[in-house]
Image (cartoon, rainbow, N blue to C red):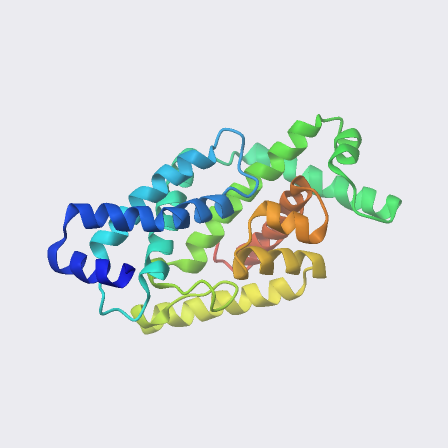
Length: 254
């Protein structure tokens, strides 16, 4: 049924058929928004991302070429994701003081992990630092959001709308890039792969579940039997470490 609608839409560009297709792919918008909502700062609403995602979906409907090798779902996913990331870039600002707070948080993590023989909880970190638990969670959330934007912009450019997200952890379609861009993309991915290998197994698992299996924060928490706040905390830490590796290699500004 959907295929018939697609064929008629491509032939006529009928507004009613377009509305039918929009309704068909609205769950995709909600799915992408749910995944990007991992640890977002409190001032960012998932509904706001979904609204931006609908704009991305509309753009995908207008720009998709049916003769393309990529499926519409793949094409639309990256248009939707791109629209949401654009909105996050617009509203997210990472002051230098936030980096300083994160480093303090990391130092406290290391100290408590050594003394406790396990990873500390948010409450224990807050007590060690003299912060509120909300302040600890805010630092993790801000870092999650900022790191996600900067890493995805780096790794998916210049061909974000042509990526098959199930192909590998951080994929890219090099067929649309110049030879120089393709070589640079390969170098980025090699650096990132080495950095990922250095991570503890649970951090690797969270990255795989999030980026490869495309699970949400809540789903990952259920699988690992930990809280959603803890998943956000671990994700923020490993993404921060990956950013530092990319900075050392000269691919990200400090």
